[in-house]
Image (cartoon, rainbow, N blue to C red):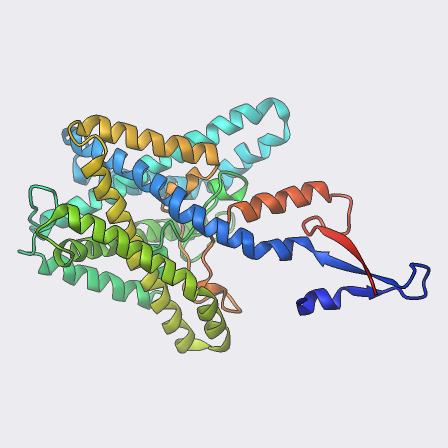
Length: 395
């Protein structure tokens, strides 16, 4: 059976000297898109996300190991400050480094600077998150077991803060900012490296002061809401998922996370159709419910991988466990060209995209690579992206 789009592209050439045959012009990219989408999702779930978690867990663990040099309040402030500076300078960095690739002599320098930028951003991101979690734990008097799992005692305050952060993010239409891999892959090229949106999208060239305030709000307000929301959800999972057995709790978290991730992706097409048919508050409510489900599944998946690395990866040598997990994860992500997936940055609004795109996750890896390949091969054709080929059939 042919799709309607392929039927529309069928050209009947009977009597035109082609011997009673017809030519179908088929969009190869459209035909391969479903397969590439599935492969991208599987890559995100089983390759990219575990590598991202391993890299995060390793660097976070190293900061715990040398905690004296990474006091919570100091790294929290440093993380926010450098994040704001990089947000302010994103256009300048993009123009200076990405545009320099046009000169072949500077490509190697540009390649190094992009990787260096990504690693610095990863460090300040974990500064921000680790500092925020530790400050929140300190002021809410969170208690831990010997395995580092949160105890139920005194947890009510952090859960109350988590609820407040969730409500605030939902009211600001910023809930999707709490999503993470496996619901997104960010490549190490072009606009993916330095550029990311702010809350109000002010232009630095139009009004510098408003842009500065926009960057501050995006990082210090929206960013902190996401950090505290995640911490509260992590505490909830520590409390309710087999709290007396760390190993079983970790495996249960991983399995539940994988099942929920699969369910979320399975529901994506239905949710897209539903959001396409809805408008206003109804559309936003459905989109936020779906996004919340994705956040919960992400956290369960991350918690499972994180804890299992602690349990099984060099448990007798925690220092080398952290070092190796960090650099193995980082190295493979650099080789794959998607190390920017480790970063938490940018502010996105819920329910803004038309045609249900607000519930479609940016999980594109092979699709972008294939698109670039088609664009390169077809630079002389009418379309620089779409690959067309012909099939000749007997009428």
